[in-house]
Image (tube, rainbow, N blue to C red; front, side, top):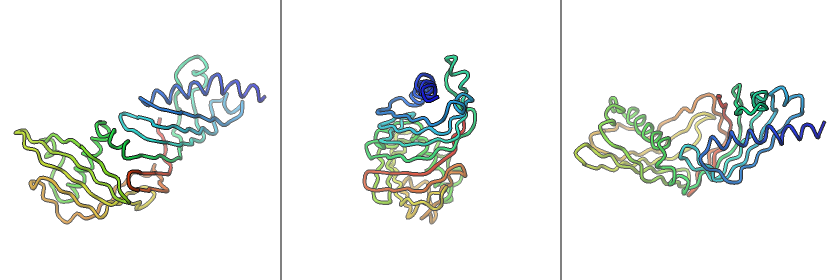
Length: 237
């Protein structure tokens, strides 16, 4: 039984999972995978647990120094994998783990559309909370670029620029403390926004960001040059 289980994992499941994970990222170093389960479970397409350790991964332009993940009760299309088809998740799975993001990662990630758009959406959300009407429509009249992100003890600073059609450039600075308000909420406080005077912000010194009930954060540790996040979420296929 042990030999058969090892053969299933080593010749079918591990290569398929490795290939699937590498297809999700543009770069990864030191990718380690550990698969748990017996023959009967795995042959039915049920994998009790998978542990993943990766260093210096890049996902859609976002750099992460280290990520450790553990997924449980995973349902996959093993029958198709055995026939050479790509691995697919068949059901949502709970994933727990920890990631470490360093200052160099954040700097390298600033050109990522995923992160840049997230920062711009954050700015729009904060402007709306500060009383600015239709901030998304108004911001569409500017070209916004993010140039610097600094991590300090329990605080972060984002620096960018707003460029008008006529070429006028105005700096943007968002500076805030960062803590967990709950297992799925982030608290930005004390919060300070510096930008174009055309965006008057009224008494916005704090803001809560709801990450959704699928997220369960246990730790958010922001130190000079480094962010460590630990918790769990549900991955939807």
